[in-house]
Length: 147
Image 1: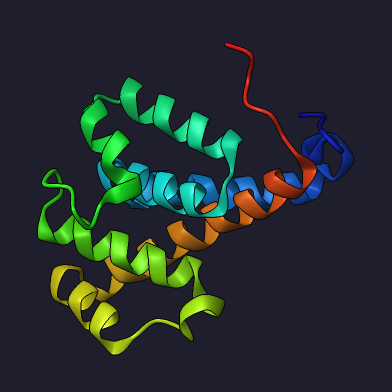
Image 2 (image 1 turned 60 degrees about the horizontal axis):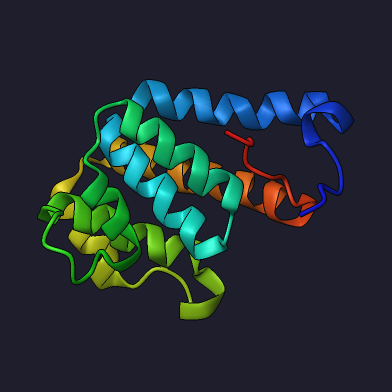
């Protein structure tokens, strides 16, 4: 894979703005949930850079490898509780807005049963932020680090 451009070098102010979203997420969302959301959206979007980065960060933060491997098939995996499933379902729906006509009431209502309005807002910022990163890294073909 040949990288098309370096976003941080080409648009440093844009990079800092998007990075600010990520910093907000890190400060406001439970990391165990954040890793699942970021990994799931990155898998859906085919972002190699983000799948690699968030998997490694989650492992370094103590996340179980089996759970991370199962994020791609979370609906059938026994490793997630109802709260995490609600967040993953919301991640799928928000990431695939064009495919499913938005976020269904069922998905939203399930998430709303498990999270406060502030938590839902922060989860939406998490989903939006990772989708922004994916939409920068995929078209620019940003590769993961060599090691």
